[in-house]
Image 1 (cartoon, helix red, strand yellow):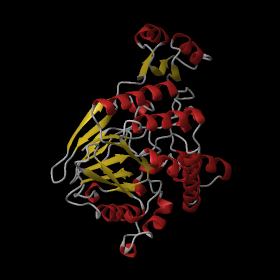
Image 2 (image 1 turned 90 degrees about the horizontal axis):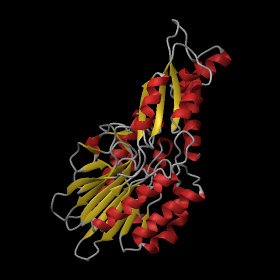
Image 3 (image 1 turned 180 degrees about the horizontal axis):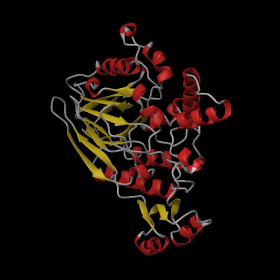
Length: 386
């Protein structure tokens, strides 16, 4: 059987306030063409189809048109929600999508309750089992664990317990089927892409690569934006994000993964580049140097750093006049010892540290660990809803 693995579309995500819907449409059109060219049996989408849980009508239209276009060619689709998606919403849509061959597993449930999807090949000669593990927030791990028989023996810690959950899902694999595990989670061996939600790729959410079941022909991972192979007992890859989503992803070549697997044989895995989408570029120099570079930038989105002798009012507007696609402009100039650009300094901090700075300025003391933990819980919940 032949699979196409894609992930982290993040449809609807702007770049510093600029819409990129035309780029998402072009990239998904390219995915559809690769599906047709590669004679794919099943498309695996390992989470974060949307940027926001409350998707816009424009984002909805593009996602569902893409899924319907693939399904109309009698190609199976299996998808899971990531931390940016609404599992409840996908659960409500399940009765409409399933008859079309679009199987979305909206939440963690035991294999016999719908988390393992059986997929036949298009010619009927083989079949696959796709065990699905949607994103599990740390605060909901206990609830997910309680669904499984014998889970009272699982570790209380997230990383160990999620490894136990992966093992439990893999127990349904059979020697006569192609066995695929699909999960939206953070494996500790992964190199981050630069655009992930920081709270969900921290130590609290880490799963060691040694917990990836060796019995899988392939492990389709989502959540980390950098395309990469994970060193594990079974072939495992992050497909990565569909576009360069932010400037931390500048050097990354985006791609989809093609997997060819047969029962009892090792899988063959390769990548196909995604060429759609505008480049993201960093440029730096004096005003005159940036003016000279402007003609070489084409339609790229630009993060510009202008070197000056001191603060220059209106410099950002000057840069955007010569580089219209400059979505982020900063000034670089000598500062006196101890001098700090407060706004820029805060922008470089993690949300937790921004809150701590605010708390100190208001109360004159450090926030307690309990207050910081409460902030992180609220921040993660709100970040997932917007």
